[in-house]
Amino acid sequence: MGAAIETVGLERAFKGGVKAVDGIDVAVAPGEVYGFLGPNGAGKTTTVRMLVTLLRPTGGHARVAGFDVAEHPSEVRRRIGVALQEAALDLLMTGRELIGLQATLHGIPRADVAARGEELIRRVGLEQAQDRRVGTYSGGMRRRLDLAMALIHEPQVLFLDEPTTGLDPVSRLTLWDEVRRLRDEGTTVFLTTQYLEEADQLADRVGIISGGRIVADGTPAQLKAGVGSPHLDITLSDAGAAGRAREVLGRFGAHLPPPAGVHLSLEAPAGAAAIAPVVRALDEAGLAVAGLDLVEPTLDDVFVQHTGRHLEGAGQAGEDAGAPAAAVGGAA
Amino acid sequence: MTRATLALAQRALRLNLRRPQFLAPMLVFPSLLLAINTGGLERTTQLPGFPEVNGFLDFQLAAAMVQALLLGGVTSGIATALEIEGGFFDRLVASPIPRGAIVVGRLLAAGVLGALVVTWFLTVGLVFGATIEGGVGGVLVVYAIGVLAGVGFGAIGVLLALRARNASTVQGIFPIVFVILFLSSAFFPADLLHAPADWVAAYNPLSYIADGIRAPIIDGISATPVLRGVAAAAGVVVVFGGLSIVALRGRLGAG
Image (cartoon, rainbow over all chains, first blue to last red; front, side, top):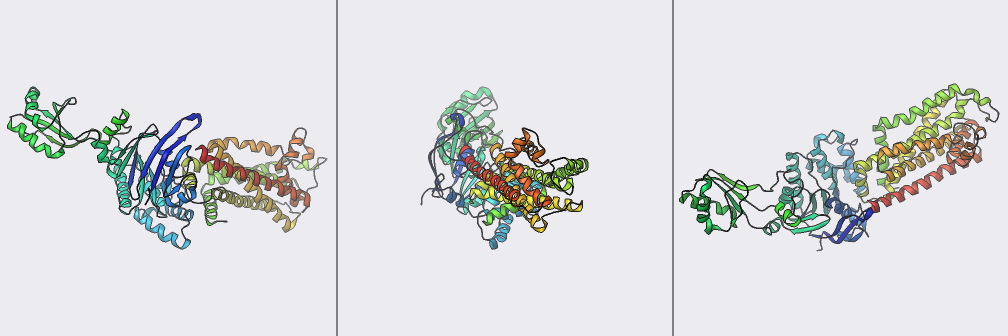
């Protein structure tokens, strides 16, 4: 079976020759959740708009669900679901009316529209609100309705363009659960996001886009492994004992330049398994530990490695950028 | 006609009813102008060259209808522009329906609004003493031209929306259409206009649409003005409807 989404040298130039997308090669397997990660203005939305046939490519090729987006856009549209940025809904219509309209636009038989609509409304938990105008919905409810509309015709490929931007944490987690459920059902999901944690949590594979180009592509684990192994940041109760601590811990791994406020930074390829032996060794040497953090490489580290800067918006979604994976304080 | 086109037309109509701030001016302002003109300009019917009419109201009904139909075009344009601004238009474009269905659905709704306009002003006219010389056949002719013109003016609004992509620009541009209306024979007979207004009116399709609607009211059904009115309204539909579909296709390329 071929790729669900495949682009070769995909380009989009605007007036003045500005290339928003500059030769993107992506292959997404059927049933895969592909996270398309990048800051605002990186070219994520332009790429999605080309893949969903809203914008003609100015170079390269793209196939979605087996059809070329430029040559057979109608075939592509029949097979995709689209939830664009900021839930493009008609605020004067009710949820039920919008679902019904979407079903009609996708050619669902008249007799099946009501049942299919009810099923999706129930799935996204909008039973109580379905007869209210969408203008009265919260941001999270609108996103859920948007998702339900995108699923009305059981698409092979679902495009979610920054589906959780601006949502509160609870709504975000609800949407994440729904994306996981779709993955379990075998739907291919192309998810754009500017949130590192979202890509890390949901995506089987991540493509990092910057300046219209893919700068890294792989599973989150592969990408993070490419920028180094986990390390332990150790803060001693007695700063003057740092030299002795370095000697004691020399056998555990290479020392790294410690960040500000930390006395020792030690490579820990074994991850969390390294914490207990290190703490025990320091304890046996009579060295008191004020704090210890296990720091895993993050997608932000990957982003920094490839672009030389941090991903815009890091930290907005409870980011993993620089966040300790495990922490111990005041041991020994 | 596809099921999707009808669903889009139904939706457009329903939303018009849910936006009274759009719908009300379409009927209220022309009605006020009709009342003011009829009350203050009755004696103009005695001017040499003014056609034989039962009253100035009979003459002005066509002007009020064309004005309201133009406002209906503004409504269609603004509604389309709001959909573009809000992103809902992209949802329609990304669905597997013919591009033309999006425009045609909107224009069908504009045609129904046209029928509503005709119904309103015929009712107002009859209540306040106007007579329809063409009888039932004349009424049907008024409906035919009114609906066609409603669709055509809707197409102008949709075209402006697709080009401008925002509602405020559509709203800002459309008053030009009203200038063109005043440079037609809608409010005064072409014979009483001075140069260059008479020259503009002679080539202005709004003149023929207004005269086509007016003839069955003041004079009965006579072929020339009716056929010219139908042709002018149909021409607006074909030209601006076609340009709207071309503009919609162009949106994809331009992004």
